[in-house]
Image (cartoon, rainbow, N blue to C red; front, side):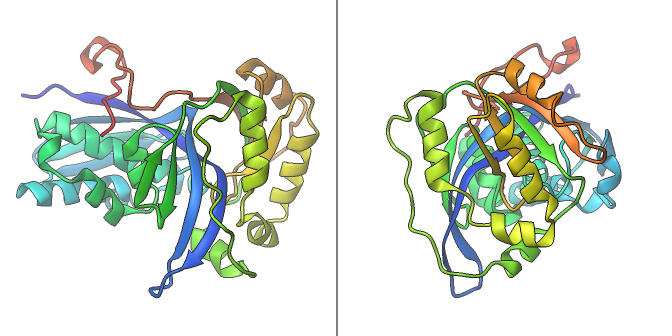
Length: 307
């Protein structure tokens, strides 16, 4: 009997996001610098007779049908690729807000694909995880990639970038779930030119300058749906030590960039607000699946190598 596998699924951040065009099928083409935050969902996978997905954690109630979320779909897709039945029990501890621009579902799906390859002893060179990920959602390929990257197209094209500087992050969400199609539907205006990512970013100041140049083309439409997003970005920008403030993805989570996690924690004490969700954390300078610690049976969390 295979031993259970426990994985972290870190929150994804769109540090900048530009809408560069629209395809004939209606999907928008994007360019986005993506990194990962120092907090995560946790997934535990173990052998079972059938597929069973259970959830707990602060945001468990937002997953109204665990049997039909991205984790369950990832398990079914991989099993179908292998010609097998998805016989596994997966438990999610849901700490990442849902429909928040943090790619929690995509990160969970990527961790599921990687973890099941280990649980089922699958040679990853024999399965096209990136193709499976693209069918599951636009953010899954970059979460599978497992380190800071620029994603283009509709998310299927992923290119690694130079190591990002270490930094603190303060994440703030107004407690409102926003559907990505609604944000795109509210968007007006033309398209942006691709910015590209330089070969050398040049420390935290260079990163902040790059994010100011990149911006987020969905911020205005997200604010039109949820005006509190604009208030949060302004509040973050005014905090002492904030190097840059913006919104991740299609919202509603906003982030402030600080010198270190301690500065982000101090800033969190100044921005308290009833109903807002806060998370002082760090920007990962390494990929979320690169380091391994104690295996699950010894009480640790295992982070498998990204593809």
